[in-house]
Image 1 (tube, one colour):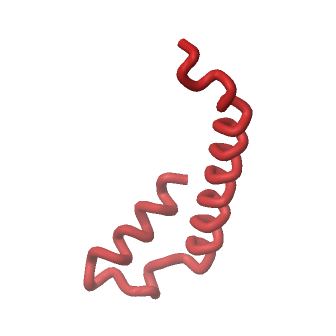
Image 2: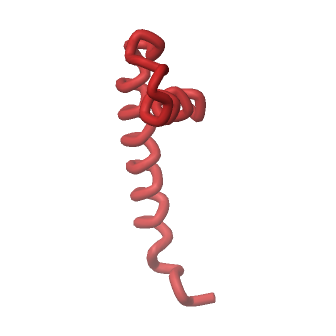
Length: 55
């Protein structure tokens, strides 16, 4: 998943790296990974919220 975001950063930061160098699936993978990480993080912290501050 890191390569997807490296391609997007390259696209955003380098002027000569145009959309012709960016594969068509990169945006779909980036959105998919972001949603997956957000859902997993939300579930993880939601399940563990009862133990916060009770160290």
